[in-house]
Image (cartoon, rainbow, N blue to C red; front, side, top):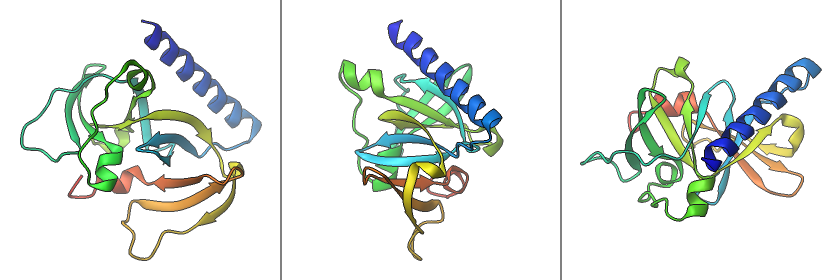
Length: 172
């Protein structure tokens, strides 16, 4: 119950910050998340609702990064371990109270017409271009869904993921 209340409070603060950014003319471009020890940026127009961690129902004979399906607010969603998909590694089980408290499912925006949610380790918040001091374009041979990488003032690297392009990949 406390986790659900904390998530609602976080979502409320996030919605408030987004609304304040719209009215003040400041543009928040990304939802910043952590997964598998790396930092990622999801374009706000591609990200949908954020859900607390729920254990998905396992689906046999699927990729190791596909965790299964889950009922999220009455809809059936495929749940993908983001870090596992990006690295091709086996999905790490979500164990321990701390992992459950931090893990979230970020659904893809319904306009993308894919009932999928990405499991991430932690929500970081909203980021705009002004949060970064440098950027680098993706390599020429990088996947189509890989966007620019950005460096913040602390020196941390953030990789932009185009969720629309990702969702259209045959492997996905």
